[in-house]
Length: 402
Image 1 (cartoon, one colour):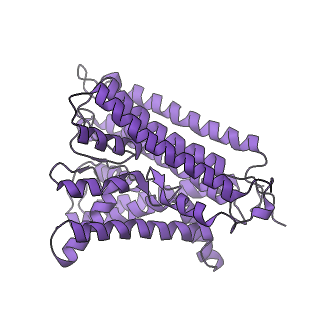
Image 2: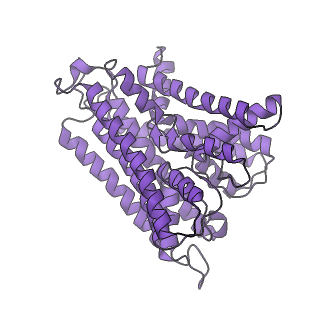
Image 3: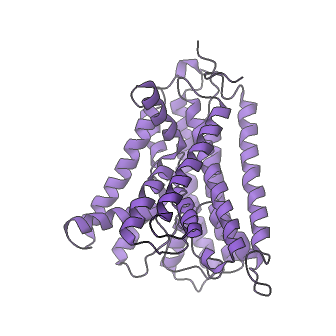
């Protein structure tokens, strides 16, 4: 029977094996989803998705990016194709939540075992999904679009089906789901432990919550003062929704009708996510702040190898994460211009930002095919696998508490 303070990773080989298994799961689910979406399960006979569009559609759902494409958007699929997309989103949310949750949990003074972390993450995901589904169903959403939209919001994916509920009711339900996905299961565990044990929030969870608040507040203030969008409360709400939608939290955002300044102000929030270990993709603001403060407030003296200080390890990982993200955006932008010269430069750059940041923001639905679409597919998947690598390296072996 697992003990609460049993070592999460007994040795580096166990940590590496965990990382390889998760990476294999990403690739196997992607291939299976693409194969299913290329058949008559997704589209009527004679009108099936081509292999490149099916692969992009599968990666789009699995990586929780949510960029729209024509054809291949969930609304254009048969019911069975929508179910496949839903299952890919569900699997993607689990695969995004687990690495960060396991990594940050291993840095706590009293880490839970892998079995307990897995059970709590899966159970919390299912619980919040069920609550969101029931709430949307009672707000005049039909059953299936309600479940699909709840899964998309919780995963910060940006895919939606139907819009039968009034916008205020819809946003009132979807916004808390999106925020739960942004903070991630590591913070869920921190909040649960704080309430159950009647203690203050642990350092990593408090840091995550603070970074998410800063991420939201900075964006809201920028939009409130720089982009005219109504007056008073309406302007404040619009600014908040714009920032939430930077990661596709409340649905795909088309910015072709926005003021140019407003669209480009959104780009840093497309690349940055509020908390490491959440469902939203991109470079985690939490991780960068954690590096600055160091990880010494966890249990550095109990690490298996005290010669490797956590702050130096985290700093190297953050530098890698930052450089790889910047290089990814630049590389995708340059290659997209080469492979699709008909795409305007600003659209290509915005699309590169969206793909690398796993953000559902674009000027228009994608109509690319062939190598350009394959490039975006690789960029979306590589961004998630990079995050997986960071968390695998961040997870530390921790001996049992005495």
